[in-house]
Image 1 (cartoon, one colour):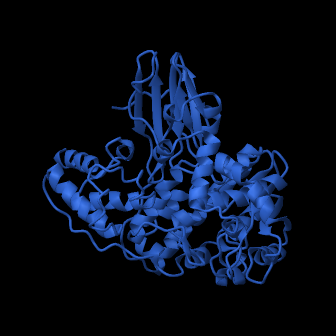
Image 2: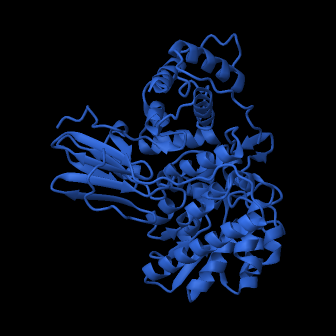
Image 3: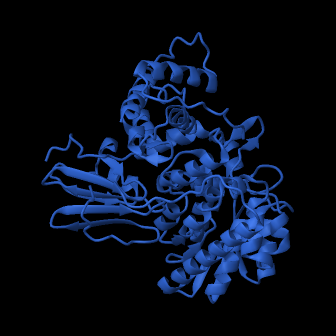
Length: 98
Length: 404
């Protein structure tokens, strides 16, 4: 098994836009999504379109928790927003403020 | 807010319980989610629960109206007040990173030994049978259960699975035979053809409540074993140890790599694997459908295992080192030396077992997912929403679309 590189945590609240930008970069690098993939947007259903599978979602959650110092509640996994970059970023932004 | 308990404040073990009192429903599930518990609310506010998702589908509930109670949680549903409250009842404490020396390892081993003894005493007391079966692959986990079972039950028989023709020296069957002989227990050999295995696929998917390949491949082994056991039998299994010790690795089959793992630190991976027991019913569900009671003693002692430090669990040979201190030479020496073999792979040599039985017929992950949707009447979107990151979907508030 390969391990992820350690993720540097950031402190303080982040805007959803900032989180979305970083999450997009993480997904492109971790899941080898080419820059010219026009279908890969911040609104695309990551699971529905096959960018992230059941294993990958665990890595996404770990990235978000490690980077932003939050704990993503299990029920957030089933939040309808937790299917795309923009929605995930909104959820995490909300958690950094609480 | 603490939700007033109707019936359960001190439940231990593995369970999924639904109780109703004066129209208020309490649903509770064990800390690891070993037992599954799904529910749906009808248009009149009736709360229906089932161990199997398929049973609620058969009652006519749409997939989007069926939820799970998450592991270690209590849900209280009051249809008249239109409220659904949820609270975590219990959570496994996981050790963090700390160095371990021989004295500490001995202390952990003593705690695990005590926990296993208590678990077996409780099982022996609770069961009205003197005769139990043990699933035996000839590996360390199942041999440990067989050894312990002999100490607590007058009659122990082992049962093992193999695909016909896969009997070589590195096979599970060869090892199981050797272990059974060494321990002096009867061995029931369930030898199936690959065609017979494929015929069990629908059972494995529906009653295993999962379409992810690892769990389906395991569920197929158990479905074959279940067919050979008498109804009412009690079976003890070594399942769960791999999650508790993060003892998983991908399997190469030709150019394919199966069972990919999240790229996480070993400590984080262990947490994910244990939490992921919430979804999938490859053992209890598959056996129970055939009227067989399966018990997983290692998971009854989960907190003793999760107290082990991450570094130790991640270190090479940690499981052997631990078992040596817990069971010592009660486990035959050759079992400690045997390379890890997954029961669904069947051999330390070439990949066989239920994995090969399916892949040779083109039944890969995509086909498993498609067949699961077909059998349970799910759309692809509904399927994706059913299991995420190892959890079955669950609500945290009253579902607004209920018409009552």
